Picture: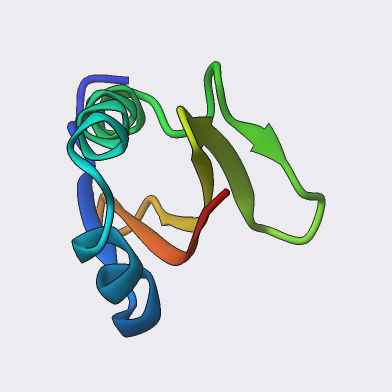
Amino acid sequence: MNDVYAIRYADRAARCKATLTAPRAASLAALEKQLARNPFGPPATSNRDNSWSAAFTGGFVTYIVSNRHVVVNVVDLVAL
């Protein structure tokens, strides 16, 4: 896989991302780098409904991948 995926956030997920503490935001940024390179590899888990999930320190994201547009669309972000 040579393409780098863009990461886009749905409104609700973007609002949650904006409230993350610095350590959680840094962990999410590291996860975003991994997902941009390969949204189907570790630490991603298939949800068997065309969506995927991946955890970061203190939360997780649920996303759908568009190979046609090379985009990871984060539809939910949960901070635990």
